[in-house]
Length: 257
Image 1 (cartoon, rainbow, N blue to C red):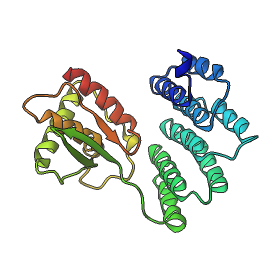
Image 2: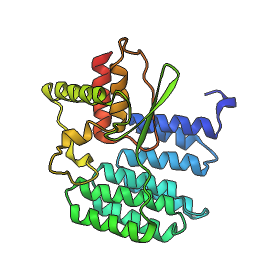
Image 3: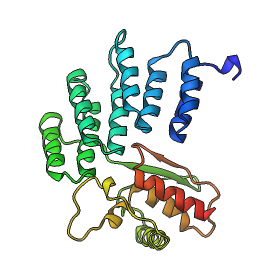
């Protein structure tokens, strides 16, 4: 890498690319060559390790950082997200409990952390404990939770979708197309991962009906309604994509290409 490009932004971008691609050896090599590691660079490496479920090493990075710096909620959120993805509820509870001690004034971080913790319990089918987390969150932090939103652009217009969104004028077509895509995927062997549900199902719901109407799926499906399928689809989200949606996107876009 040219010397003039060796800065914090470049390192963070490259480490994030390694993180999302599972390139641990490359991330280690890049991280080890950085002489001055900022908080954001360390957080990017913690995220990389957490995505690969290497939690002991991620925690050691945090411990070493905190020897001479104030703790960072972003680093703990990275571990908490990895613990949720791997359904490690004991680790999730441990990390969240530590966050409540370290970041008592960071209500937004604690709100997001409690959602991840509750979702971790839901992923293992412990609805009672998930409900306890929700009730404690309401009692201590309030009820305002940031909803998941996806944005996409079509012919210069920015479109916004939420889960099970029916605000768009073509919502009936969008949902019908999403169901069609879901049926095709199931026919070819796709199985919906119930661990990514974030709440108990209502009587008229199934795992498929809930997951196949996540906001990013509706946004992508909208593009497939057009007469000319686009060669490029860009989705922007305010929250992380769930694991089932990640698989769905990979399969759908691969078949559409």
